[in-house]
Image (cartoon, rainbow, N blue to C red; front, side, top):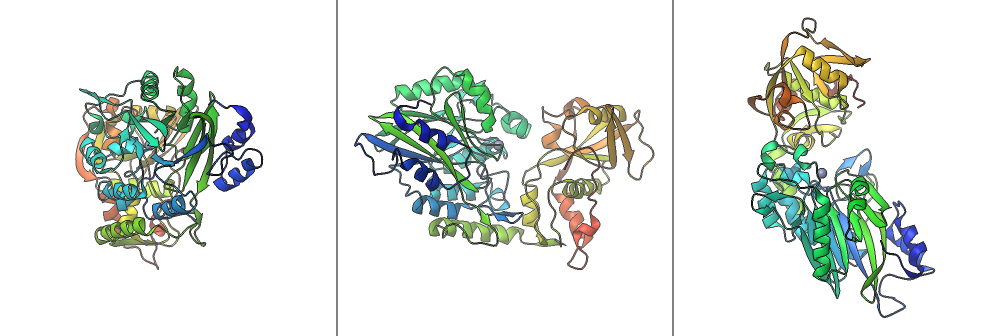
Length: 508
Ligand SMILES: [Zn+2]
């Protein structure tokens, strides 16, 4: 980041990791250098503002977790209007991707259409492609991209004919040209179903970023923004490798806020679920960028309190329509919990034990995402889709006891398991089967996993069994069936039927 003149102190303050209302930062800066807004001391100085979110995962209705209610698009849009006075002439609204899928049933159940509809209404202008955009395959992503009033960018996804999507876009904000280039996360291929990336390749990004940045400058960009779906920490690997200057780097994917600097470039990330947004004020003098100052504005509040703004009526109307639609399909109550079921061993055991009820397998392994907690009270189908939103099916693998044992002894990512428990000591796994004869390293065991994991090149399972056997069962269905069969109620809550005990060395 090029910092000139007397703005270094203000800039340094702005770039500190902050979870403060943006207005406080501006107030802190305004004593010495009032460099934003309309009250510019010189007529040649102008400010343009970037508003960034990512990893929204379709949470159109603000989710509540551990006493905090997470934002929601209707409240956020109201804050952009009221607090930010956002207009298309002065503000660019960006998302780092993972926007419509991989989360809330309200969007997932309709293949992401509701989230895109809402994001169009919120005024998003540009997006980076994240791994979850491809969760339901390329055809669904392409339909969502067609539906979007904004481009989906990635310089590092190719198909047989060349770039799969545009890499860059240029936006004119009242005389200032803002160039944006998109970057998909490099590990995308390990994070979606193997079929979803068929025919796509993911070239190393540095040369692509350089070429895109140079092209944007040639087209007249006054500022180059790198909109990534990489975790913010990836800026540490990638930014030092670039030869072309870039001015702002947005991270995403890790669901964590960031406000730091790498190789002189501000690196900013905005968390998840519309819980808040990052704001980057770009100050230009004579058309040249002289300052970039970032802050984070929370849009979350204690659940017992009230939202930070009255929800935007247009956005809320769309949310209400989709909430009614998902209710019509998924409101059936299948159980009851007094305590709620939070992510961790209890929830994982509930899931993997349900897979073994089919009788198809000896053991179950699970090392993928549980996407939400289940709140205390009635458990609906919608709750289950929130926990397990992906379109994954179960498959079985045949594996020798010795191979399973060696994996559990050495893996750095211990899985959730069912059908046995295990301990690891001195790189030896001690496996204790449930209700079975003693574990036999020379025996062949049938292990049930999701097809997502079975075909994933980041997992060992293809080496164990290159031809997994499909069960034809969606990974949610046994959980739903078993929960129904348990017949839990307010007087006999679900948790009385679940095993919360850790079955291996995984921490949680
Ligand atoms: Zn992601």
